[in-house]
Length: 519
Image 1 (tube, rainbow, N blue to C red):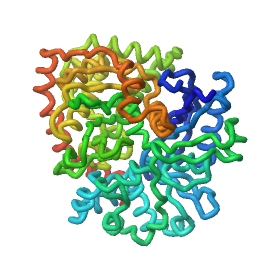
Image 2: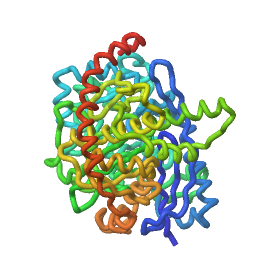
Image 3: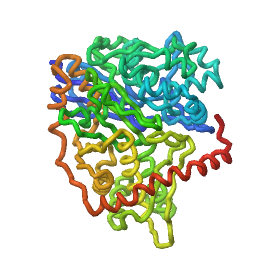
Image 4: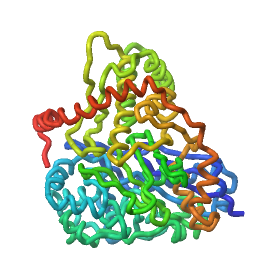
């Protein structure tokens, strides 16, 4: 009996394969740590073949946890890290390593491109701000600096597209990434005008056709069946980008309306649902993403600050270094538990922390490759707990900053991501946004979102509304109301958070010039 769906989420940190029952119950998960390299000049690259081997390994390991996995699997659905550039040649072989969304090399070229008056037209067509993460910017950089690489390439994939190709032999992308990068968001198709503005008309041949996973899929090839242990011919579904898949699995698509979804992962992803193209709100800064959802006519309007838990990882890394030097070996879980203790013992709002710690700068709600993190207001009275609390408050202010760029604040925010388990962070986000906060007990929202597309595509559910009613709604926790006194503290501090990023932009640019940053 075909009673299982496998959702694959090839993330930046971890590649996972997750088995779900047809009604959404998570049964087992297998994962491997993802590997990539960072380079001088801001590069971040990943080996395509290794990514495929790692993904196949997770499926084989999943079979050791789920009896008779191959025979029971009704379909496999794939999502993965967004943006980036994964090039293959005409024979289907990788053209070098993939450029990840973390890659910062196109940052100053993006500054130049965003200064072109035509970029506003591009923004209004795609409803997505240009930044260094995106394939359009990366291909433009390669055309200018390494044209021989593009001459060797036949197709420009994203991460999930590469894995879909390895599983089925089909060269395709999905409407979410295809449209927000190169397309007209209203039509969900490529736009020749956008390609012209990006100066990529001559490279249109690199763009694969778009495939809608809720209606179309392809069979697992014999070679992929041999490597994964699944049965040849098993339906394989190309999911939407991980940002949308995660939001779908975490509860963004809700008939009630006034709901936002925040994922506190490596990045901070803040999403509101636009039920029609007319509901999309474009901002003056030409930032953010508008991404097609696997629901007819619906969009996820999204602002994503570049670094979320990366800030926490940096902070805990400092603690670990100090403790290791003294002979201690604390685990990450121990440090995370201690973080809540440090935060709860400190005074709210005593510092301002700007969470722009990524080497790629910031992309939401403003775009600046030179943006950097920092504390404002330090004095001798501050201790480590104050720094820890300021980091979490900085993440909450970044969330508020992002939501305000998309219009009014949602009345309810649904949190997911590993950091959402922190009671301190949940309280701080609720107070900073003045929203009720709920967390989903869904452990692997991205893989679930992809599997939900397969469930609709195979006819297990008539619509995504029906699927959400069984896969999402029962897993939402109780609403946590915000603390009014704490909200007043944050209301008073938030304008300083925004003013600081405006005031420091010339400083960041001057520091980048000293580092020798180049277009």
